[in-house]
Image 1 (spheres, rainbow, N blue to C red):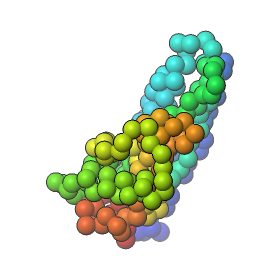
Image 2 (image 1 turned 60 degrees about the horizontal axis):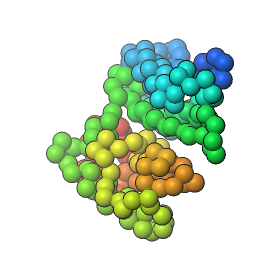
Image 3 (image 1 turned 30 degrees about the horizontal axis):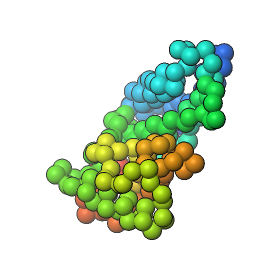
Image 4 (image 1 turned 45 degrees about the vertical axis):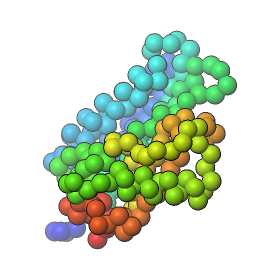
Length: 201
């Protein structure tokens, strides 16, 4: 088995309370060196989403949560946590937070950490997203000027998926606009030792 990088073993845990039901992932044994840190970061983020939705502050708020594993291979774990809350009105609101880790060390990666030092990844990715907006004829709430340096993302197989929050650039009906970008189309600026580099080869 030497040299074979097995996926992490993931179990689903649940947080329950009145009007609250949240599922979240937990790394189980065999635990890699960074596993405990990853679990701690995930739990902290789950509780932050619950807090951001106003649960506990507004007695009317009902909240539920779940997760999706996007990548669990080649020592990379990328996942999305979702939290839906309804406090009355026409509809509820979904928040999404994605996390990407080196599954062995527990290191987490912001978008900037995926690219070579000094690479103008914001400009490059913004151009790709702008082209997809035009090609897919996505109606915007405001003109698109570019992604944030810390834009939300996850990694799915050999694609970097950039996305925006509900209402960030489009109307509610579009929820989270996703923009998949092949790693091969940006391989000249990718840090080959980082998560995208590991997906590429």
